[in-house]
Length: 91
Image 1: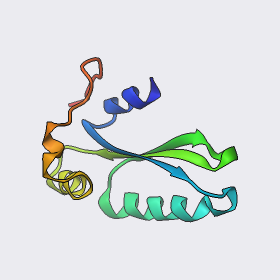
Image 2: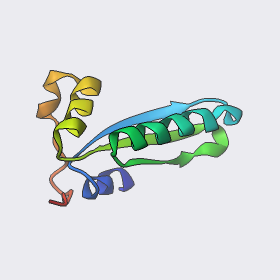
Image 3: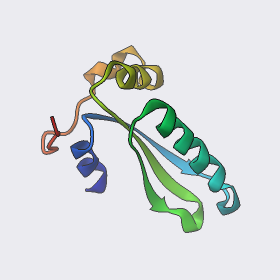
């Protein structure tokens, strides 16, 4: 349910699972903060960090730069992806 609700933040997302030792969690979090600052896109993370597992969602806004990030990560066939029908996309 939470994953689907993220489409209220942006029309597309790059969702990845991250698993690593708990002691190493701060490193990717700092990297994600730098990406967020550089690209100006929301990055939402949640999960169960107690076992070193969390979910990272790069929220792709309706801007040329943001879409270019999406296509770099997902490739040219990414345009066939769309939010689920029940997702309400903010415009």
